[in-house]
Amino acid sequence: MEYCSVFRTVLKWVLMPLLGLFIGFHVMVAGLLAVGSAVPVTNSAFMVWHRLSGGSVTQTWVDYDKIAKSTKQAAIASEDGTFATHNGFDFNSIQAAMKANEAEGAVSVGGSTISQQLAKNLFLTSHRSYIRKGEEAIITVMMEALWSKKRILEVYLNVAEFGEGIYGIEAAAWHYFKKPASKLSREQSALLISLLPNPKYYGKRLTAKRLKSKQRIILRRMNSAVLPQ
Image (cartoon, rainbow, N blue to C red; front, side):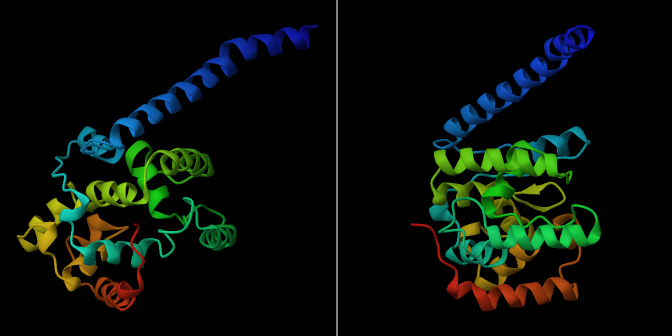
């Protein structure tokens, strides 16, 4: 009887409130995704955390058709080669990441698709854990159900971080090349995408050998990148 009493107490004061928070958070996410399917997305969890840490944020929304085709190709070639055809997850990459993490004994490799990265950027934090990856997966499923692939890529390129406080491809294009995102060349697009996923470091080291090497790899792969229809 005492055990049952303790269980009811834990259920009432711990488990039920946690369940309520879990459901409430995902209802909020669904609402924001519904709104974000039709209006410019000009904020994200990463931007909020950046501001709370005392930094400033520069971001300007730009529509899909105002982003250079080469930038879209570079993003897919670098970050998610099967983006146009998967349902939010690349299970081959996930399996490879799990093996790498097991070997290192920590969550150091993500294997994330563009959809998963966007779910994290919009609603979560950069902290790596299996709990966060699980939450990321739930939001990814919701996003893939509510948004088209073009919308996911459009928002991704508008909220991704390209340097200290520089969010979105339009702000990045002006910061690094003094031109709009629509006018980026193939080489410039590949270089900007090469900044991911460590933009704060490479944003100050544009001539770094590893960055230039990644740029060359992206340039070789760009023509085969399949854009969403």
